[in-house]
Every structure is written in C-alpha cells, then in structure tokens.
Length: 451
Image 1 (cartoon, rainbow, N blue to C red):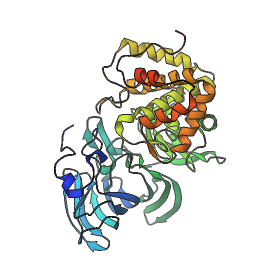
Image 2 (cartoon, rainbow, N blue to C red):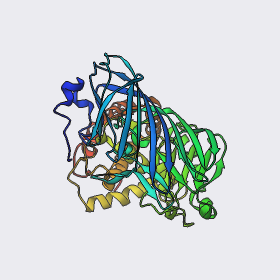
Image 3 (cartoon, rainbow, N blue to C red):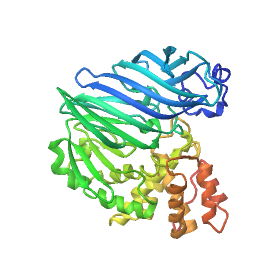
Image 4 (cartoon, one colour):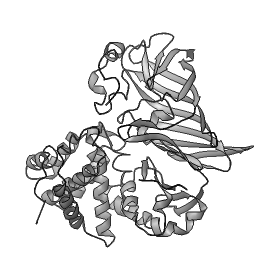
C-alpha cells in the first residue's frame, strides 16, 4: 500500500509494540492509548454537503505520551483541540491529526480529547475504491469498511479498537437521520432536527455510520427484537416482497447462532441504487435496486443480517482474518436458503466449489493479502471451509461451536487462531489437516463430503 509504513518515528514517539498496527492497513490505527468512548456532535447541511462537528473522545494512555495521533481525512479542517480542558498544539496532514498536549500524559493517564472540525466530507480513495462519507442524490450515507471512518470523524481507525458511541446529528428537516444504536431523543427547531443515538455495545470505527435521506419509517416487528425499515415512501409497496422475511430470518439465525446481539435491527433503503449493500452495527443499508419487488436480493438480506453476529458483535482483530466475517455471512446465506425451501447448503457448496475450481487463486484464506481481502473467492471459500468443518464434526457439534463462538467473543475481537482453538473442543479428532487444507494452503482441497 502507498504511504508511510508502521515503522519509523512512531515507535520512539509512542513507545508501543509495532504489531499493534495492522500490516494490511499500516497507515491506520494509532499507538500508545485506547479510546473508551466517542461522543460525536455533528451538523450536516445536505445541499452544500457541509459537515461540522465536535468530537469528544475519552481515552487512556498505555505509555507516557508527549504526542499522539488520530486518523482524520485531509478534507476536514480542525479549528481547535483540547486535552483535559487545556488547549493542545496540533498538526494535520496525510490523514493524521498529531496532537501535543499541554503537558505529557503519564502511563495510565485519563484523557478527554475535544476536537472541533468542519469541511466537505468525501470518500477516501484506496485499494478498495472509495470508502467513507458519500453524497446521495438527496442525502448521504457512510460506508466505512475498511478505512473510511476518518472521512467524517477523528478516530483510532483499527478494527480491534472498539468503544461505545453517542452520535448526535443535526440536519435539515424533514430529512430522516439514522445512526448506530438506539434513538435517545429527537428535537426539531426551526428548519433543523437533531437526532441523538446511543450505541452502548462496543463498536469498531468502520461500523460507525450515519444515513440521511427523505425517508419514512415502517415497523416490521416490535418484539422480541424490534425490526424497522427506513426508506423512501415510493418503495414502501415493494418492502413486503423484498424484505418481508427479515423477521423470520432473525428467528432462524437466533436458533442457529445464538441471541441477537443488539437491542434492535433496522434496514435502510436509499433512494439511489447501490452496487452492494453496506453493513453497520445495528443496521444494514441497501439501494433502491434491492427493493424492486423481485425478491432477487434476499440472499443479500440474509448476508447483511448475519453480519450482526459475525463482524459486528464478534469482530476480527486484524484484517487478514476477514473470512471470519464474510465466510460466516456467506454460509448464513446458504443456511437460510435451505431453511426457506431453496437450495440446500450442500448444493450451494457444490455450485461455488466448481466456480472456485475453475478460477484458481494463488493466495490462502488465512492471509489473502490486502488487495484481495474483499474478493468474492474469500467469501465463498470461507463458507466452504465452514461446510467442511460441519461435515467433519457433525451438525450438533458445529452449531454448538458457532453459538459458543458468538457467546465467548460477544462484543469483542478474535482471530483465526481463536476459532481454531475453540473448534478443537467440539471434535473427537484432530482438525489440523482440515485447517491446513482450507485455511493455510492456496490450492483448493477436494470437495468436502460426497462428490
């Protein structure tokens, strides 16, 4: 990747181990401290695409800090920074906000960092296209994965750096504004409305999101898990066709994966078409093309819902382990297909195995490389790996393992090695050969089970 490496001045500056940064995104993430809470007070004017904000970050230092850094896009200008109520010196370049507190912060020291900023937010360009804040025909959305969060707020942009959030967004009335978590208050004044959301369960920066548009809200279920849809009024007539089985999906996934991890779930449907849906903690975003009355997007509906367990609650510790998100969500598609009367998981496994066999990839699932980590083969080979594991240890052990996985690492971070270690408790035989073939060898193994 272009840009600075994790080596150089960061180690003596912050005094933390180099492996705290992710080699897949060496320019993202920061050393020497941990943020324990984000409070974002934002104002967004839709027509000029103008964002202003005050970010209050609560953090604790790991080491003595003379300086520290945050991730923040260069399209946003900082006007003031304080640390523990004292003005702090800062510089802002190459998407890094470098802050020098009024006095060094000792190891274990508490920091309240307040940053006032404004600008015209735009996506961050990278190996995966443009990610982050994106204008719509009428409104905006956030698609942060993997490094777009800094396009709209200062942060420690690393997937293992999870924290609770309070997000207040003031925007033009009558636009609807949605953010992660539960709506705490809504207040209209003059031509603007302020929406305040609390995301209590810890969340990585790439899953933080705001969606703004000319939407109406429809309730799909009120209990046991509240399920809502936020969408343009013109698409409401298609909602039952394309998203009508979401509540049944949730019930199915709760049975298979364990309790739903958040207080509610919302599906957002934009007035614009989107190439692919977008996951966020506690909601998913689809384009108008996914709500066309054809029901063709149902596998994507299942996929994004499954991410609430695999990715949003249990989050990878490093980007090389992306199969722990996408392989699991893809396998959930196959499980839902079988449960809802479509093709079985085995039929889908055979279908995609043949496609993978026809297009070999010279990379391993456990380390696909940063440019390949969102390639479709990672999703499908990840799902095939889970299917092979299920056939090896049996349905009872497999689903017991998955429920234990989502329980043990609920709201936390995990690695491939963590999953391997946990799976060993659900097998009477060594699984080393299975992992070697499916995770650590580039060549495609034989099809699992009967050919």
